[in-house]
Length: 67
Image 1 (cartoon, helix red, strand yellow):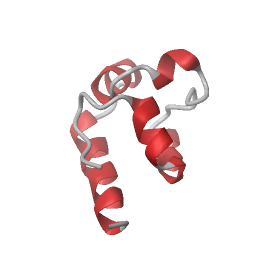
Image 2 (cartoon, one colour; image 1 turned 45 degrees about the horizontal axis):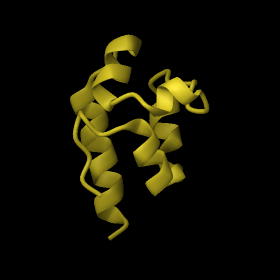
Image 3 (cartoon, helix red, strand yellow; image 1 turned 45 degrees about the vertical axis):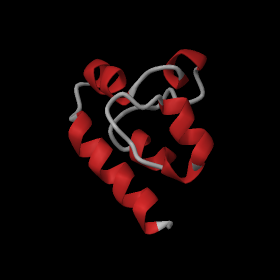
Image 4 (cartoon, one colour; image 1 turned 180 degrees about the vertical axis):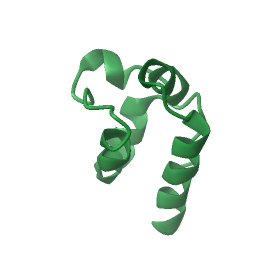
């Protein structure tokens, strides 16, 4: 799976729930909320004041390692 800032959080979690800690460590504790699952990484990072590019990089590294 290739992650971009436009990727929807719910799609990422559906692909591999093991990435949940990456979201939790930057303050996104609302992963079970239906609204948060429909947000893009960019939207969620803007709300939480975090760097979307850094999260995308971390997620892509995770998915690359699983291949």
